[in-house]
Image 1 (tube, rainbow, N blue to C red):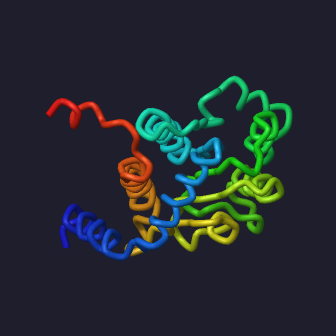
Image 2: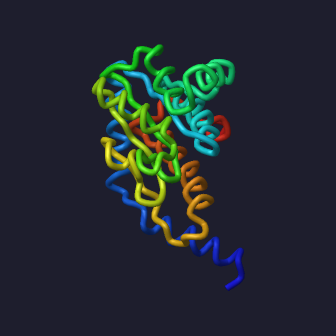
Length: 198
């Protein structure tokens, strides 16, 4: 099959296999976070950090949900990495932000983090902190979901329909799915610009 066609077919197969009930649970958790006056912290590394930054904009502007992305502050992030190490960088940021039981983490990761082997330990430690402080955790991840899936309130695992395209399909669908979340009537409080011009 032509690689372009194969990729697009893989997108359709992925879309058909998404667990709608998990998406509904994520919406519910995010609505409850806003209703109790909690904050949303969006976390990721690499492409996930880019998603987290964009998602924060949308959750704040479109959903009236106080949201933050620790990796947006490159000065603090690199100071923490330099002085305290990569693994604890996000947890340290969250401690200073007084993460508490009203708050929620939204994780964007391909593998979801792992203690053994140690992969995306920064996400693992952030989730450990959230659980110890009774904050909610939701995520959009790939593969088997890793640590995020095992320790979250609701975690959508993007199905692996083509092993060789695990990362591009997972990261592509992460963007699609957070846009789905911010567009849900239970969450969205303000119209997007182009739709408001009709």
